Image (cartoon, rainbow, N blue to C red; front, top):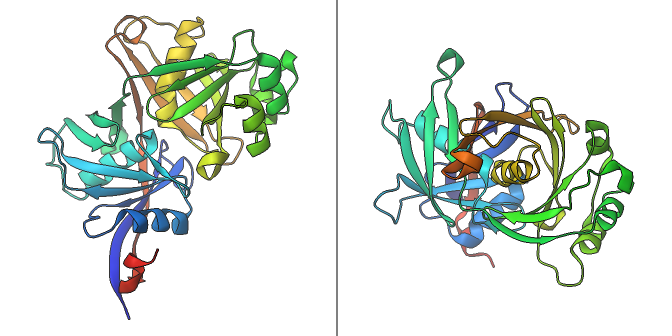
Length: 304
């Protein structure tokens, strides 16, 4: 008997145009949904991420958000954070007119700022969590893993960085090289070497407006991600390090992602303090597209 129902919404994040940007499913009331069921729902919907909203455990946070790809849970991801913030505002779960609040993610509290946008649509910003840095990678190996020639890459070594999800950044010379790049599991193992942990690969080229980007995450069940807010803060840090973008306080630029796969996304970046010393904010617009309910047999919640 089908009597286990959960309402959800799908929104396109980092776009003002329906069917562009990065789609996200948000369950605004996930109470009663177990962790295993969350993972199965994310696999069933098969979007890059699905977000589940729960009551917060921290007093200074508005809601707790758990984020799942089709393959695993993430401690932090940008487009689910911004998309969930939008849904909470639209559902009236955050008081009208609220401009600043915090969402509790596994990585910790994430500050959200709401900026007025065109036609009353808000531009929603998140503050990137603390960025950590790991090893650098051989340029020739990176080029081979991505199906590129080493001459396609800029002279900067690819770098492992993380704001909650590990990402390997590879800088190339132009948008055409970004569009030619591709990586699968074999390429991931080649790039990461013998000591390997799951990571994403972010390929980008500097542009006059900021960056033209693609992101691959086969180990997370995502062949290619249309927009990766969680990687955009570390992208800004990488670009500032090598002088690919200004590190002056208050500088804003964009990362254009997803164009090659037909889901053009625009991710806004703002540098707070010199070289981002006071934080790196990532923002975007959100477009609602679907309201639905997922109905399962009651026993499904206990299926192994």
